[in-house]
Amino acid sequence: MPITKALLAKGFILRLYCRSALPDGDRRLPAEEADRGNPECGRTRFSKYDEHAIKQMNHNIELIRYMRFGDDLLLLEQVNAVSAPTVNGTAALPASGSSRGRSKTVSDYLDQADQELTDRYEALREFLTNLGDDVQVKTLKNYFAFKRIKNFACVEVHTRTRNILVYLKIDPDTIELEKGFTRDVRAIGHFGTGDLEVVIGSMADFDKAKPLLERSYESA
Image (cartoon, rainbow, N blue to C red; front, side):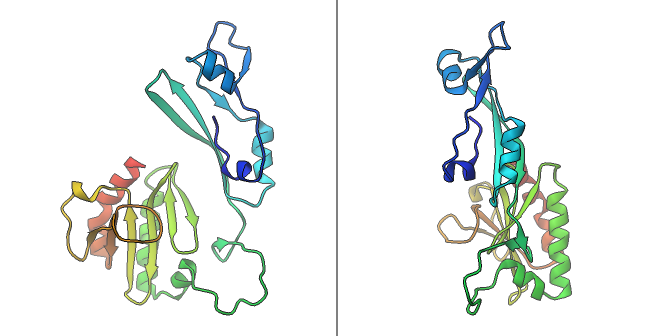
């Protein structure tokens, strides 16, 4: 059935329908009934009211529709996406009195970066967003998430080392790791998602990383 994470978290229940694949295709069945009694029926859809509802809530919400073809093929299609309002590039949080002691965000580090590091990040961002029309960018506290249905690149900016760390959706066992450039982080804690860490310390590293970035995008 279509997925509305934030709506479900706040107790909203949407009654979703599935169009019957029988000859009288105009007959609409509740999705759960269709799945149980008509296995050929696997299409669900949101109404304009669902799309309006998510715009009224201060949450990151994605409406995802599936189309099932037989028993072994599932197509996911993003119908709509709404992001919570942001302040200086990060999700807005309720005021909690004093801001003293607030930890720095990835946006703070980017703001403090020198021109070369900023230009390197902007080149990376442009490359990632140009991989496809379906690419979305989410600014989170500790990293920038580039995603399709799932994250394919989680990007951190480090001003002290002047490195950009990118975590990709690639199995490290399928490539030859290069010390100082790629690292297997399956057993190492880090922000974001991805099993392969790529260190972009220069534009030369960025050019060398492009095939890996494209591969991760294709797998997301």
